[in-house]
Image (cartoon, rainbow, N blue to C red):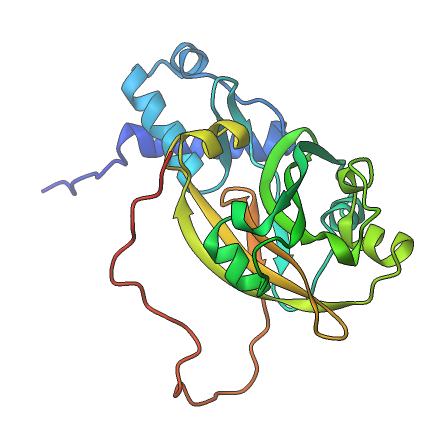
Amino acid sequence: MEPTIVRDPVYHQLNARLKAMVTRAYRPGDKFLTEREIVEQFGVSRPTANKALTGLVSEGVLEFRKGVGTFVRRPAISYDVRSLVSFTEKARAVGKSPTTKVLNWQQITAENIEPEARQGLEISTGTVLWALDRLRLIDDIPVILEHRYIIQALCPRLTQAEVAGSLYQVWTDIHHLAIGGAEEVIRAVPLNRKEATRLKVSVRSPALEVTAVGFLADGRRLWWERTLYRADQYEFHSRLGPIQSATPARGQLRASAEARPE
């Protein structure tokens, strides 16, 4: 009796060939073949081509950009959760080109901001703040959507031109503030329609949300932020110390997630 020959499904074979092609003929950031081009070049059906492409996106080999096409994925940007690092400096250090679009820059008072931000900053009604929204891009790809409030009295001469670059550098070098650090909460969230449009991904795409309160070295609170990082572009890195007791708990488990407005 002849042994039974088990062949990989067509899309598995196609997946392997496409992956080899990426390694051999493409660089990170290059636009990849379309479904139609794969169908024509490899003689497979459109559903098979779609399944193979989807598989490579899931594996992190390719990335899909809404309305543009499929591209060879660039290496993920690292976020060190142990220290404050300038986005601008971090991008330049790895040979990438960072840019910032200021979406909103205005003066606002505490009664007009989110209760969560007011509580985090421990401020009273009437406190004047700078309100800032920024879109951060690397090599023209939007990767961070930032929403921030800054206590105006601590940097009253801060300008819109200055916030278009590294805030950490501006605070330190121009306004002579000693930044002490920040307390952060990091969680996974789905992007609503407005957020997804700005980050150029699909609605409900995953993102990493960082909610933080930043301090000066003397303990005064300087800023509150809610920042969204595209999950397909960022990796969060940390180094853990020795085993410690989990009591009292340092984190919280959420039994259910409330729906977020779009």
